[in-house]
Image (cartoon, rainbow, N blue to C red; front, side, top):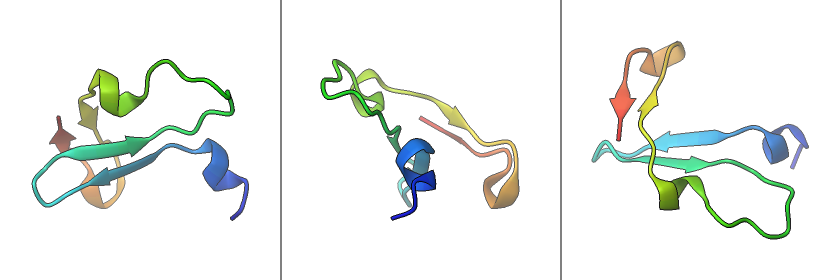
Length: 54
């Protein structure tokens, strides 16, 4: 896999409207992940422009 995907956040929005986010981290130990903390995602360009997901 290209290194681009090792450092770029990936956002997937399911049919149920729930955003699943993978924010890569090179640290061996991470206390929190985005899914544990919870996020609101608003996309500003592309096919999903203006979509807000919780």
